[in-house]
Image 1 (cartoon, one colour):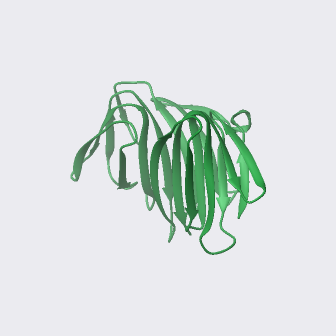
Image 2: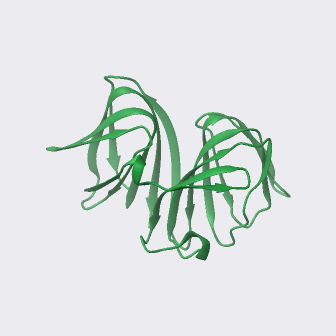
Length: 192
């Protein structure tokens, strides 16, 4: 397995109409979000206004999870769903989507044959969680706290705001997360 860590200070945050957004990863690395030439893109965003409209993204599959706050997400002509901490929603970027409520979220966008699933959890201090890498790429984002990724003789420390992209090299590789502090963690599993 190959582990690439991006520290919080290496990430760029930009403003959007409803708050801020931080791109955590994009693949291929030379892809440009506005050109919609990515296979996957991972980001976080703050929604600082009571009501916001999502950008239309044709031919993009979207996964969203609330990290803090709450939102009521409305997909016109489809459904409405209330999202609280670690609740997720999967939807098409083609849909007309709005949200109500202030929140911080974790987003994964995929195009083409790529598919993603996301989940969030709390890892208590001194706790250990074993994970199996049975996807092509796993992204681990530390929203709060600090953890160590332990795999064989390799240990990588991630703190608040850091992101790790782990690429599979062999079948079903296993590693663990060790909580240094109480941590809120978002994970994306991506199949290319």
